[in-house]
Amino acid sequence: MPVIYSEEINAALKEARGVQPHNGSLRVQFKTPDKGFVRKSIGLSINVENIKVAKRILEDINKDIQNRLYQNDPEYFWSKHFPTNSESQTKNISVRACFSEYIEENSGGLSDSILDKLKSSLSWLNHYRVADKPIKSIDKPTLEKIRKSTVSGNKEAHFNGCAVSTVKEYTNSFKKILDHAVEKEYIKTNPVPTLKKLPKDNYDLECEDDDIRPFSQTELDSLLNVVHVPRIKLMIKLLAWTGMRHGEIKALSWEDVNFGENYIHVRYNLTRKGNLKLPKTKAGIRKIELLPAAKEVLIEMKEFTFGVAPQIDVIHYKNQKTKELMRRRVFLSRDNKPYRRPELSTVPKQWANWLLEANLNYRPAYQLRHTYASQMLMAGAQPTWLATQMGHSDTSMISKIYGKWIPGQDPDYIHKLAEKLGQK
Image (cartoon, rainbow, N blue to C red):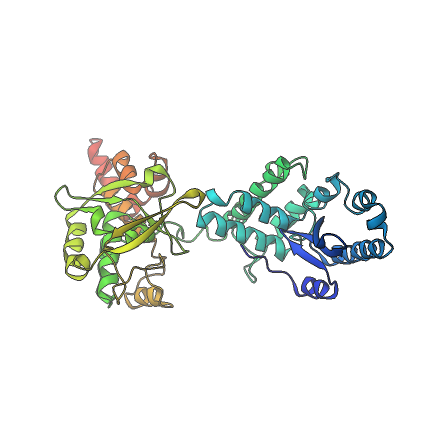
């Protein structure tokens, strides 16, 4: 993740020749008579004040070289300017430097989504002007003040008036960095576990739940009637009748479709970085049994892409491992090239305009996955079976998220329950 510094820091670095940022901290460059140019870290975090300190350190180093201290007593020179005890370096390592170090040391095991969350968390801390402060300065009161400011008020800026769930996500990402700092002995304890819980939001309590709003069959039909892009219309149908994620459906290949045994084998997911990766969990690798409506979509798609020549897909694994496979994607772009973005449509406001034209309240396209779950439950699907179809490791998410929608979408639900209980 490239580091972007403030204008003040860039200006200070420009004024301090020989002082450079490196791996989240400052280093100095100087020339010795026998080694030529030498670069040494001084362990200071990157901020304007520390750049001034580094500039003075470099001036002292060059002065001792000019006065022949380096030639006459090199051992004393090195011990004077770069003591072997690294305590002074680790004490002042910055928050930003800890992020960089954690990402560098764990790069082989971090998914694109985790990297995005870490980036957002760092931007959050940078907004509140603590990203370039020493990691040891981030204590419980500091974090609680930042969290409270982030959730307070209406959303008028990027990091103000946020949902509590959003702040929890920022905090949990930062917790990983603080755990790393404890492991490296930059700090003694991680303050996150002791933080006070933020009061739950009730801003939209009287409104319809914004998180889970599946389409009814009537709403789905209305939406499909206005979608004018044939391949996206087919994608919408398949999403609604398989519960697949957008990235999974755009990663799907004909090699993963088994018409004879009537299932789709979900093996890969297209990330926001355009990479094909395994699903997040082992349960995500699954076989989805095809409903007739889903099978009809695939039969129709055969006319478009089944005969297209296989193309090389690079599968990305952890620890920078990759594998090349010849695959034929089921869904291709207009020029028959594999999609590079997981979003259903990348045309600005196209999805929103379709909903508006269909006279439907706005909801994200991800609700198509929720539509599958709610419709299957209403039809009497067993939660354990449905969990495997959707890639969940157990039924807890099914019960928690979708169960409450069954009564709402079936006006006669209470009457049916009463009839089963022998009541009229």
